[in-house]
Image (cartoon, rainbow, N blue to C red; front, side):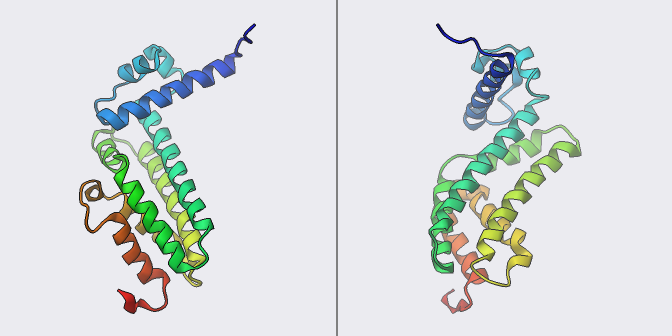
Length: 196
């Protein structure tokens, strides 16, 4: 006999299905085209089920953006675990940047979100907080490879993320995102900058 889910388990399952459906629709159709009705229908639920789990399309988008960023950051930090020095760290980040820039269109979705989002500072501040958290975490890890760079850790992380996620990196092949990141990090982390 199958155990019946509790109300909390059922709501969590509904929420997960809505997040998965929204993620697919945003990636495939863009922010504007992925309406609440379409997200709910793709997940197999009513619009009411959507609104009992999320305040708005913006909220679900920002949750997906944060989860996507956390997963991407986690993969990058794991890649840095094996780096023994600044040069190895730079190569690990450059490889991640190339792979990330070639997969997905999240940078374009963020720009589209900014274009279509309802005026208001709350979601904008939430999005900024997510970005700054990721920038800081990566920057702190990278600063460990270059003593004295800890004070500008957020800037260091921002350079990597913003070069990797620059809209042009979705279609320009040379220089690649990895090439740009390698160039910037070499200047920031290596004491001998004559290699540039």
